[in-house]
Image 1 (cartoon, rainbow, N blue to C red):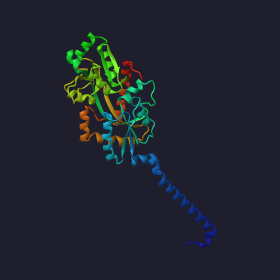
Image 2 (cartoon, rainbow, N blue to C red; image 1 turned 180 degrees about the vertical axis):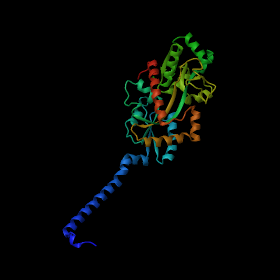
Image 3 (spheres, rainbow, N blue to C red; image 1 turned 90 degrees about the vertical axis):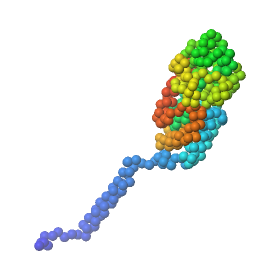
Image 4 (tube, rainbow, N blue to C red; image 1 turned 180 degrees about the horizontal axis):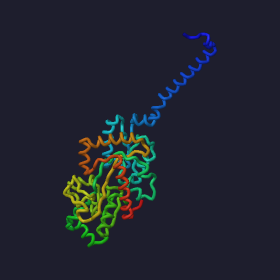
Length: 357
């Protein structure tokens, strides 16, 4: 039984004070709890505007720059892929030709574009591996200013000899040609698509490796160089296999060897320069898709997947086969390493050729 005489009387003001304290405590707990609810997911990974753009990419048409004139193998393949990727990504891919300065003008447009994945370029061995050493200055860094997306094609060059010249001098092999050059120092000329082109560098490498003296004749592009070869203005040239395949099939020129380390699946009967005893010898033409450096990795990966899917389609693979492409699928990281390796290789070759632009 409670002794009421000893109980302390409770005053109304004490009740009010305790009620206010309880209310403040509940409010504090609610704020603290809501704070946990709101801030904990942010601590785990806040969704930013950039992340959202990556998830929704693409939401508008893409721009695909070809840094060379229309009609060449690189331009044709860019347009084929644009249609395929359009279906995959759900947005148009608009191809634009921006030639000039050996491809530097078109490449520079993408080097300086917004790093959001909406601007692409069909880069090539020239724009990304040769031009940095050929030109006294170029407006972009071929490694730092680009994010590689996908390697499209890797095509051998092929050593071609004027047919009448080959028949007249009984030239059937690379060694026959070298023998003629040694017997006629400085009298054998070779054409190319221009100073510092892959054809020029291959000719300079042959001269150095075989220790023969040949005269280089640069033309304004591979097509004029082909015409000069067919007419006999030049005795030989190193041409892209994709561009030379029809001339070889129609027996309008004498093909002696491919310039890559392995034989071509398109013309497996042709030996390599290394088979002919000219080693090391590894010069080819390649081109691939690049976007601007700093583009979110998730966007680059989406582009990579879309282009690799397009390259895996049967009709695209058939086109590449006809071109003589020996492309091995590469990841983004592998392509990055490949470009760096090619850039270092062509630094030595450009120096060997003495070419400048």
